Amino acid sequence: MAILKMNRFYYKPLPDNLEIKKSDIDGYGIFAKNNLKKGVDLGSTHIKVPMIYGYVRTPLGGFINHGKNNNCVLYVKEDWDDYIIYNVRTIKKILANEEILLNYDE
Image (cartoon, rainbow, N blue to C red; front, side, top):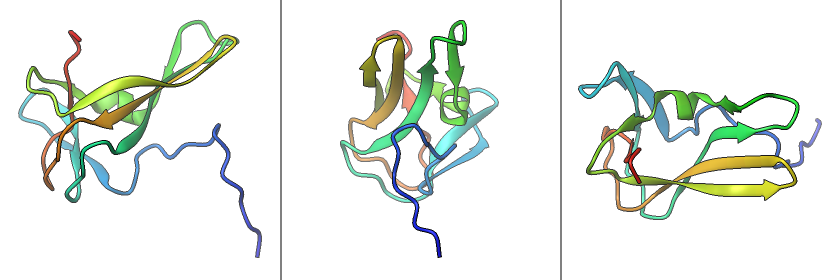
């Protein structure tokens, strides 16, 4: 059996505790499958790679909706040379089936 080492360049499109569902806000959104604690890193939303003009948007970044009463924030997880990885972190407890929201204005 092969053993895989964790590598910061690998990511899962969505963590096991999140899912994409129809949103009342706009189209589809990201929802918690179970309760999430404050301070949980939910994964990468955008990745800047020098060989690509602009950013690569992950499924998490593509489906997360805006809300003034946001329960998550975007932060820089990795920043070296011309590479930047943005991740989402919870800023309060999120209940199962609650939509994950960012305030795009912040």
